[in-house]
Image 1 (cartoon, rainbow, N blue to C red):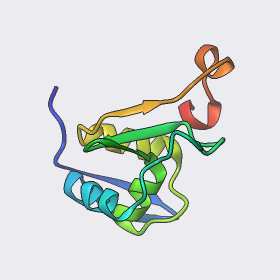
Image 2 (cartoon, rainbow, N blue to C red):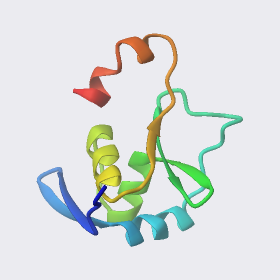
Image 3 (spheres, rainbow, N blue to C red):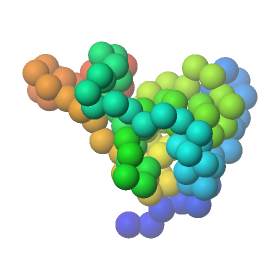
Image 4 (cartoon, rainbow, N blue to C red):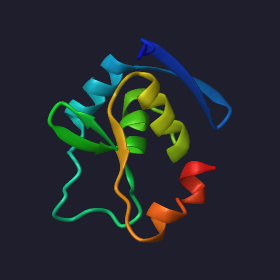
Length: 102
């Protein structure tokens, strides 16, 4: 599978540039997600090195953007070839979350 070296997205009418290197640098500045105390409203994560990070936190830290949508963050990180996955249970497995999939 071919991956992009750079991608762009728009948030709040501003276009931002995102690279895998910028994401890795952002991860170095962030605290990894804590599986012992997960955030109840965060389902999408990316694996950077040996740690998990919430996709929106990564993209916002890497670019300085605010109010990045979960769907945008997860798709752009995947486009860069970074492992992205969701933690799901119950109806999230059978129906998905419209804010994250639509």
